Image 1 (cartoon, helix red, strand yellow):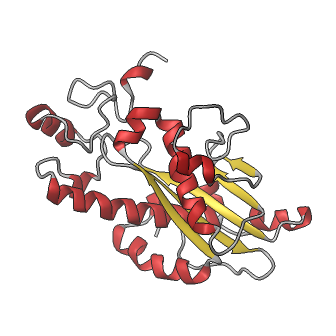
Image 2 (image 1 turned 180 degrees about the vertical axis):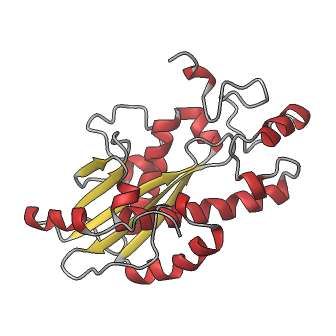
Length: 237
């Protein structure tokens, strides 16, 4: 196993602010050419939670280790959720809005059990609950159920915070399972291996077969693409 183990140090700092239930949040699939973006949420009770051995950012774990962690994380958490936004939704509303849709689908699962007082979101941009939501988000489900807790972004939170690392594992395992299922439905793209990401073999398969309905059609997809996970509309920005 690689990487220094994440801790609960940052999570516990929110006890001083009066928070009890804290949700760690992370996404996977942002840079893929096919398949959904997927967001995981894992809620802990800061007054009772203890560390969870073996948890790391999902990118630092192999597939069997991630799979083995899922039931342990589910027992450890006060609540958890995993939400997806499809390739078609990414094409329709853009990546940031699709991430918010996926995140709030996960949020709607979590609040069936407990409503978090605060959220730690991996990265430096609050796509989960932006201050100005505007009219981009026309999805009625997203508008009816949306994160209303304070969101604290933190760069490399998936490496530092156990709750965020755990959320990344749940999201990664569920998305990988979806892509393996899609590989049977749409053979030839190698999704059971590449999980929709921009490998040379995946781009070559798109050149030969054309894009499927699970590809992000607004992105540069084939071997002449602009790089992994770059929407055509964002070339040059």
